[in-house]
Length: 116
Image (cartoon, rainbow, N blue to C red; front, side):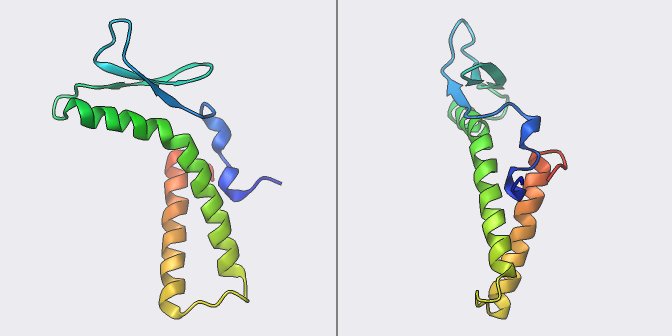
């Protein structure tokens, strides 16, 4: 049975993704690649951003599959904790956990275009 955090992950190029250093005359672009090839490019000299910020954006994009997978694991764990009668929550803790769980699920839905 598929875990909640794993749902919807088949819709994008499987990770890991990496940022390849600019080459071949593409010095204004960072390539986000897998072992099988190009996933996306990120412009490194965007109009209102500096080069280092744009490069950091490319690394954030490259980390997306790993973050999505780990967020799914956290969602599964937190869901189980909220359902477990043995796990003791005070009112504020439970309310925060439920709110965080909803936010995490919303982030997964955003990343997977609605297929949780």
